[in-house]
Amino acid sequence: MKKLMFISGLALVFFACSSSTSNEAEVKELSSVEQKVSYGVGLNTAAELRKADFGVDKAALIQGIIDGLDTSRTPLLSEEDMQAAFKEIQMQIQAKEQKAAESKAASNVEAGAAFMAAESKKPGMNKTASGLMYEVLVMGKGPKPTAESTVSVNYEGTLIDGTVFDSSYERGQPATFPLNGVIRGWTEGLQLMPLGSTFRFVIPADLAYGNNPPPGSNIQPGSTLVFKVELLKIEKK
Image 1: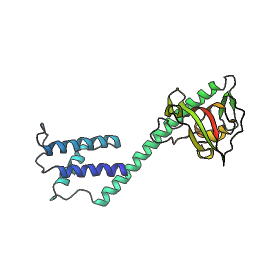
Image 2: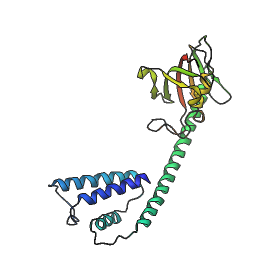
Image 3: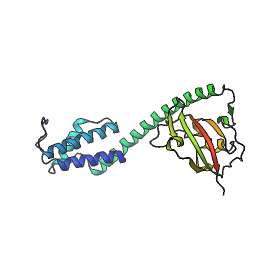
Image 4: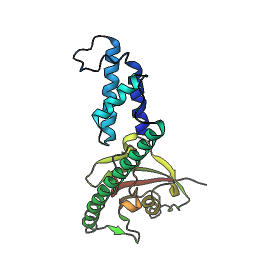
């Protein structure tokens, strides 16, 4: 609904920036600042409509602009009917996005399973009952954290194609967090690590972010993730 309300808000700005209905014919040249602003708002509105991807009816769109500009006209839709239409199309968009996400997730889960099958054949690779896979790069000699511990680590996270999506090494600062506040693969995996250890984890989607990766991340739904983790410190309670 927010996306469609934003689009309708842009349209209202377009109405306000247009001074008359004399511009109904195709415009070939923009000379005044009012024309330029009106045209710019029109372009931005069209861009938002393309993102919405619900099948814009150009004739109805243009008629809505004409009726909105001319206050003597009676709109073809009541406010209630317009809001109901917005709600219905938003539900259709969400269903379409959900279906696409599920399809992409299934593909990623399949690719992750193939990757993990290959990883399982490597010497030194271990697998827990949950499906978490790990290999010991450096075995420390200190105590192990518990699920209630707060730890400091350096880490690098990659997709199965090797793309780095997060790294404390790149930031130049270790990460500190309660172990029961992260993905399940980390909560389980770090409890296997004595202080001073460095492990490599291969974490299936159901122990990572599943179908709900962090917003803005290049992690896709259903992604298997790989982490190199160095346990630096177990905070004292």
